[in-house]
Image 1 (cartoon, protein in one colour):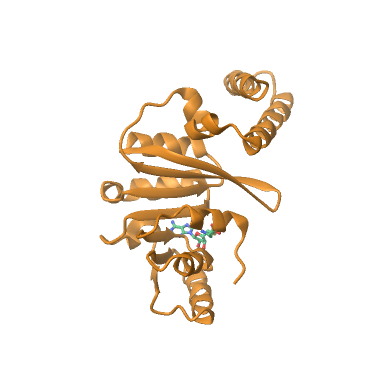
Image 2: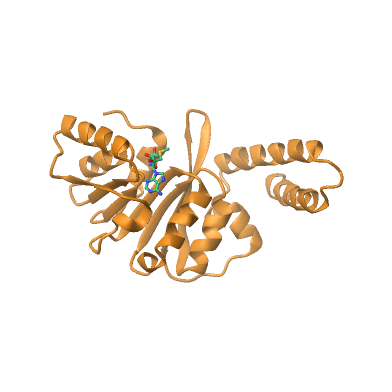
Length: 222
Ligand SMILES: C[S@@+](CC[C@H](N)C(=O)[O-])C[C@H]1O[C@@H](n2cnc3c(N)ncnc32)[C@H](O)[C@@H]1O
């Protein structure tokens, strides 16, 4: 079964012996990849809607993996149970993810690892989890269909981060590879366009964007 670069990269970041909960599993392709990749990984696929779970069930059957992947219907972390140590959420907006965490804060105290790939508001996700008992262990960019995605791994623990760390990602800043320059180059261009379109009396919004443009220029030009 074909899997895209983004999901493969997420799957490859899962440690052996992990017990995963894939929240918003949709087609179940990541769960299928995980159990095929490593027999010591276990996973539960969960989704808020029955339609995606039916799709996942068909895909699992096609791969003869019934009994190896459990599917659960429910919203966010409501499908969590104690054996899970790693929660994966990908292909959702960052604010949706934060909403999911806020609904079940006590689950956050029991989980060891989060592997997240928010489509947007990555900074907010980092700030939220780092305020709630996690640090950023790793960050990866992955290019899929000409779009660059962020994958962020959080582990239980505490670290201090600067404003710049939260904005760019502390590990991304250390690595500063070609995908970093491409990703943040696009972020710079989109802010320059927004600034040129924003009415002059949007003082606060304009100031925020100008500051971000300065931050981006400083990091990309050096
Ligand atoms: C765009 S798909 C992403 C699928 C897959 N995780 C990926 O990265 O390709 C989003 C999935 O999340 C599910 N979803 C949205 N909100 C959810 C929530 N609060 N709890 C569980 N699943 C949710 C949707 O039903 C949908 O199947």
